[in-house]
Amino acid sequence: MALDASREVSLSRKAMKAELLDAETELRLAYAWRDQRDEAALHRLITAYMRLAISMAAKFRRYGAPMNDLVQEAGLGLMKAADKFDPDRGVRFSTYAVWWIKASIQDYVMRNWSMVRTGSTSSQKSLFFNMRRVQARLEREAAARGDKLDRHQLHQMISTEIGVPLRDVEMMEGRLSGSDFSLNATQSVEDEGREWIDALEDDSAQAAELVEDTHDREQLREWLLAAMQTLSDRERFIVRERKLRDQARTLESLGDELGLSKERVRQLEAAAFQKMRKSLESQSREVQHFLA
Image (tube, rainbow, N blue to C red; front, side, top):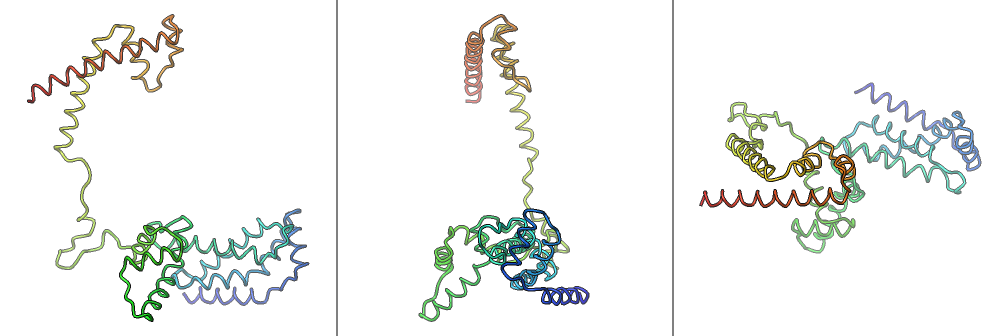
């Protein structure tokens, strides 16, 4: 920990000693990197604005991420900005780089906030970084008016204030209300070491369901075999090639093999399905009559 702190101080001091670029020098370096891929120019440009990256990284320390990691992510954002920067647009590099640095840091914070992905849409990101601040302000204003907001009213006001759907506010409230817990953690000392994972419902198929499923599959197989027996040899061949193969054959290829037109094969297929449907309906009625 002390080593990390020392490295952080050293990096900050080095960044503060870096040169300040005037607009003309900055433009020349940006052109050198864009047009000639001059790595020396890129290094000088990034070094000059590393203080900006460190300053922005420091604003996100309250989210619990190590400062060294935040600075690293800010540096990555700065390098992306340098790679994407177009000096012909007439904008200072620092103005452009701010957005890339911020986006890189925010993505890192959200990726590491929870084992469960917190959110990836623009509304969810806006909520993650603004919800607590907006909520505190709304509660202060309500208290000053002598009002007391219930949870639904507060969520509705946050939704309107930030401009996001109400369901996103409710989802983010749950995400931010607690940290991750291991399913292997003990529930309590009274449970003699019982873990939370033992309380999860087993959603796999039970023995009775497996037996019923096997019986239904066998019954369906018998019905299909009986329905297939109502077809002629040619109809069975078409149905088998069209529906029972992993790679169904085309009407055209079957027509070439049988010496028929594509349309005639389609008609025979439709007639075969009609015969099978009648057979299956008949067998189904017989079963229903038997059960009744």
